[in-house]
Image (cartoon, rainbow, N blue to C red):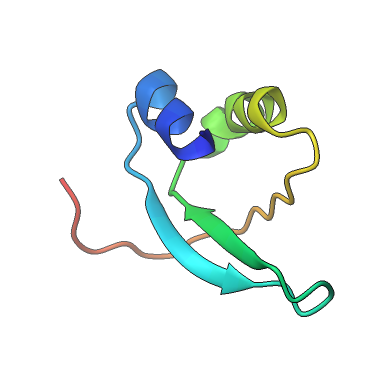
Amino acid sequence: MIGKALNDRLGRGVTYLNGESTYTGEDKKVVFTVITRLEEAKVKSIVDDKDESAFVAIGNIHDIKGGR
């Protein structure tokens, strides 16, 4: 599981969201986490190890409130 691997290997919290593919109509699990730019390569490697066909989108976050 990608979320567990991110949590175990990076110590990052993960949120699962329910999604649906408009292309196939299939239910999907969306994995959401916040990382630093220095962790980006590691996240991509972890995801690729767990699911080579996973779709990954990375964006900039300007502000975060809450968490630890």
